[in-house]
Length: 542
Image 1 (cartoon, helix red, strand yellow):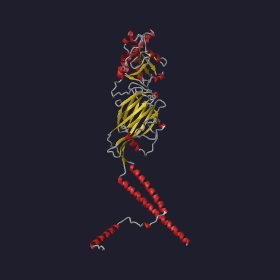
Image 2 (cartoon, rainbow, N blue to C red):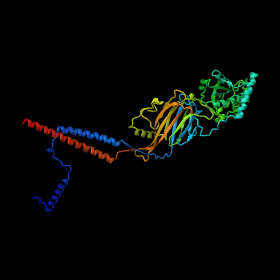
Image 3 (cartoon, rainbow, N blue to C red):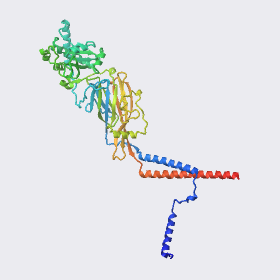
């Protein structure tokens, strides 16, 4: 029996077909039956080309999405560092003794500080920069200034020297004046003397002229206490450095007058005539010098029968007299430390300085090697990588050219193809071919704040450009190494950012749709063109 549909069922079926028909009417992507389309060779070529272009652009866009970008802004300096900026340095001077090396700072606002010691450390080195002694730190203590003979004491010393000179002229050998040393006699006298005090002087030096009668009078007084036939004696001598220049250079004399202390048999040296080497910085009076000699080798010890044929033990000058005696370990000095300065143009100078010595500019050599010189805090490896990533797109400017007096000293520690803008002077040498040369470095600094992607806050790094040159020192100042700094009032703010995900998806859709549409237009044009050419050929044949 045939099944008869009810009127209600027929009505629902009609409504369903009507709703589907309405839904199809809003279809944006209407389909053409497959049997009504055909493939062509040019269309296949264009389709393959479109697929290749889409794949290439998709890979590029994904790579760009995964690679962070840096957004850079320049603003007025509003960092949390405040008004102060820290300068960190480590500079080696192979020809500048730690005895006189001084670090001075100043700025355009009139602030000047000389011979900083609280945050500065020194270490003696040889000419090849090898360390020769322990690190020296003066802890910022104020030194007692060197005392000098007053006018009355000076006149008494002159009178004593004149009197003994006349007495010796009448009775030769009755007195023992100061010993005049030469390059030939120096080593012999040093070997024979248990304690040898030598005044290295220059006749043109006012401090040397002031000390001259005092030293000669001290020699007369000291020599009178020790008989010439004693095995152990204290001998006072002097060397004219204008006549015996090489001898003074060999003894690391850089300032005049320099009183050197050579002791034999001290606790810090071996036997066999080896001498300890120190420099006397105590008061320059007959009383002080005579007392110093007697404390090193008391007269009772020198005349004691037990030391008639043996070398007496001498107190170590540095341990027994503290700051009045400085140990001389080598001709050079490695200076490291830091200073806090205001964010205004200023300078940091390293030079030879003393309140009681004179220096000959032509004999001073300010050759130096910069191991590091940077502003602010030292960068950790991770932060340094972020800084290198920021500069990855900037062409390196190369190393400091020799025409500026600088050359790389350690290629392993500094890559010439990667400039470290945070520490641009690192591992650079600035030699002086002659004496009396001042080296100047002009550093322009700018504060850069870098905020890594995902970090809540950024970190600060000071970068700087550097220009260096050398010239003959001015007559009014001694040769030195000058580091001029000029902080910028602007701050560079760099934020590491990644592309937004919605922007990434939108770009992907644009790539696919755009390439598909453009290639479709190209295919249509090519197809129509070919059809027109075929029709034209058929017309000519007919």
